Length: 96
Image 1 (cartoon, one colour):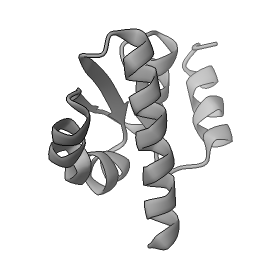
Image 2: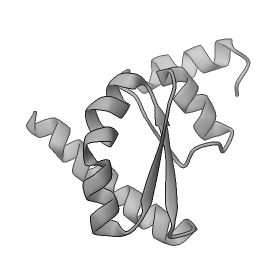
Image 3: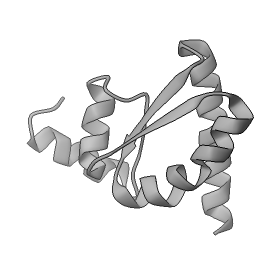
Image 4: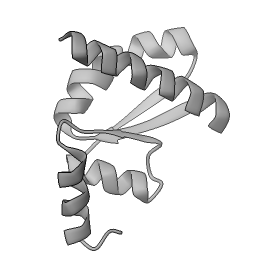
């Protein structure tokens, strides 16, 4: 549980910096259900209140979240799966 909160803090810091550099208004977050429901959905209201930035959660499959990131549909993606497996799956679908 402590590892999840450490990861969450790192993600929130990254999101805050990315949003300020990008538009300062919203961050589109994509990814698999476990990561979305376990991390981003619970912190969404607290993050928005503290940062003044809207989180737009766009759940998909873990692989779909990575593909959406590569194709620019989301600013950040999250998955509860190893990255190398997601990359291999995306390559099988023709995403480079």
